[in-house]
Length: 152
Image (cartoon, rainbow, N blue to C red):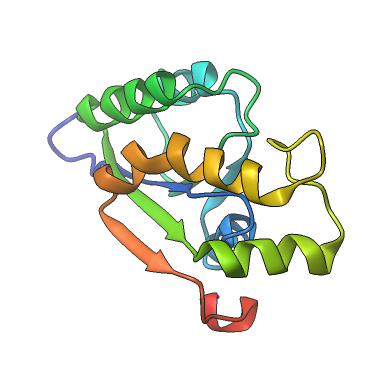
């Protein structure tokens, strides 16, 4: 990066499954961000190895990522934060447990961390695994009372 090259704006969009991450990523894409959802964490830093990026980027990260671990997620955030060619912002979407349960019930989708089909256990585990990212977030949006339209 030269002194004249501004850092690339990178928004890491995260939060528990069902809180609106995909909606937020789509909204960012609509305003000009290149967006990549569910990229393996180990690949995220490689996106920025070559110079010349100019378009802002939104990366969606959650517990469904292939190589997800809380430690790997936090390491990825630290690596991206330390890159002087990036302006990293962590956007965490939160939601109450009751609303997450309702959202999974309405969509009739199984929570990916609940192989037995009990959404509550998977939601609780998801929230626990994502807590360090919540603490590290620059922006926290509680989507409990937001429709997808309101979130956009």
